[in-house]
Length: 626
Image (cartoon, rainbow, N blue to C red; front, side, top):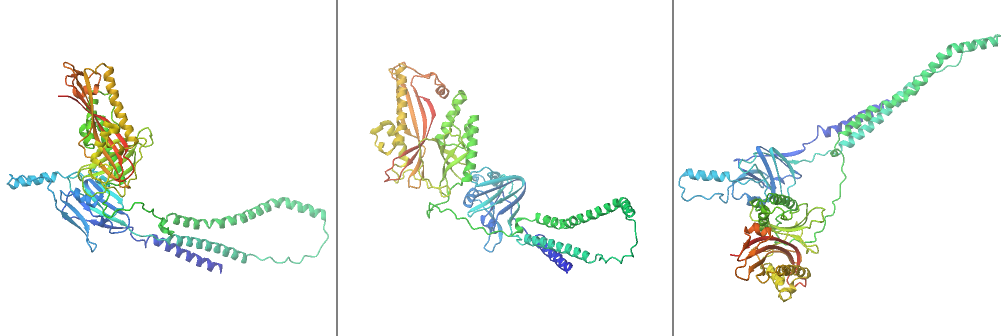
């Protein structure tokens, strides 16, 4: 009966293991759903709608092949449409019935204006050729959330959220890749394959045990049965001493052989359990080998309870538009911007700096390059840190120009002060440029700012909802510096602002005293003027209805002769000599410093005062008075 149970166990184990293996091989479904995209007319750009990529659940994979560079970028759908507005492109979309189709979208803005005097068709064809050659290269645009490129082929996995689409292109001149496949993973888990194979292995081991027990029982049942000894012959007298000697001699001649035989018998009996134990090794080895090839999909997965999501502390207004930049996008933009400005600072390339700076921030750099070209020991401006973005406040806006404020830090180096800056993107085809840049004050405390995922609205320059309008803030600060407590705006600012204004007045007094010490006070005179520049102030709203406002001022210092025949000499002022190219002037000189300031301005009706957050002061120009 043991043999019958052993056979039943082997058969059942074979069925279970076979069923588990079949689930992972023969009956295993496909791993992915794939769709091949086709276009009727090749174009330089292909926009794949986010709805197409989200038409199946799970992670999306884009496989694109082309003869040259293959470029892929993710961006907001509205941003892609704006970037592609002036060119023809293919748009891949999905219909209500689930059909994926491609449509050629014509250009809404002509990249090259037609010449009214051109009447011949050949000229029109030439214009079309020029327009065809002027497609923008998508690589490196600050508009993209992420971008990838490779030669010949590109495979990228992604999770496209709502409102985001994908752009496929080459270099803006060649056609976009036409061999494109979209892939989505399919559910092909076999949670019972592993348990079936384990159960089969256990039953096979049990059958092997039954089989061994059956063989052992059978051998014992067929073994020789001992019989009783035959009747002894009649006894006769014997010589006990002789018989003992013969017995001892016989034992000496046969004992060795008997001993060997007995030892071999004991050794064979000792080996028998080991042989039986070794019979189970192949079973466990086969089972282990099968289980080793099982992936986690072959086992039941414990259902995980969803972790509670954090409750948002800021409610999104109904009319709030999307933020213009994400955190990952901001990190990439800041890294590229910092590297470009660092290269311009090293090579004194003002044209390169102009690709990432504008306004007073660019003017200060241009002056620095002119001075350092003649005075190498002149101190270079501080680099823009890009190791960490501590605060990011993008504008919540769907159009252009766009503005973003960020506070950047230089990693773990506490000796380098954090830098606060604003950057602006004028249109979809241009990159962000720094408009205001300053170093944070050690005692500055930022107001409560909206998170990066929400963004902030841009406060109008003439907003009446702040204690002082952004376009009046620079003039109010200048009056505090010039008039001190007599200024009508004195009470608007806190102690930190007044302390900074005091340092400016002390610096002016030191210059006048140095002029007197040089016995030049009777032949020359100094005058000072602090006034706003023509730069538009930048203001982003805070949570408490206030705003962070960035303004730019000019701090001019004029020295003129007060007597006839007196010349004002440059002396040891190497920057003035480098910028003017003269040693002296009978009319005098005007030295102008650019000053960029960041303030925290409270809302109208608040009892709080305007606080100074960051300051930057750099040489802007030295001019000879005409």
